[in-house]
Image (cartoon, rainbow, N blue to C red; front, side, top):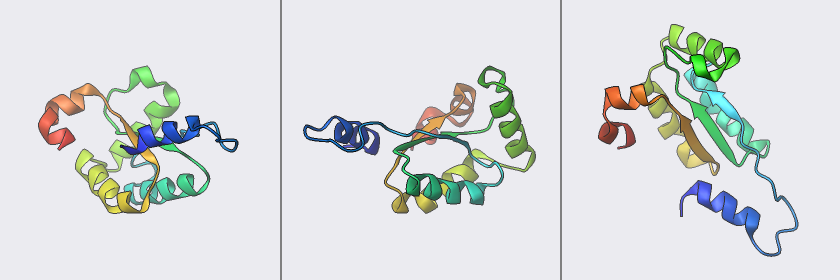
Length: 119
């Protein structure tokens, strides 16, 4: 079972009288840096997050609102790439128990190729 399914299964488990809600924050990968994003993933897990939506910056995020647009623009202007984000996630993944969900423009997936992107 993947981590996200496990989170929701645990929340719905019979007899669960404790935490019945999931905290699912959003981070733009690479803002303020890729290294800081890895540390923030650990910090939000320690703070009680169940799942994190990790935004992969792209050049035209107009539908995401001005705050996310500014964050993605900042990350891109500091050299963040999909490859660097994947390297960071790979380096911290073993220490995380939270689920990770990518917020990604299909244009990025299309450019890289579906098989390479999810591989």
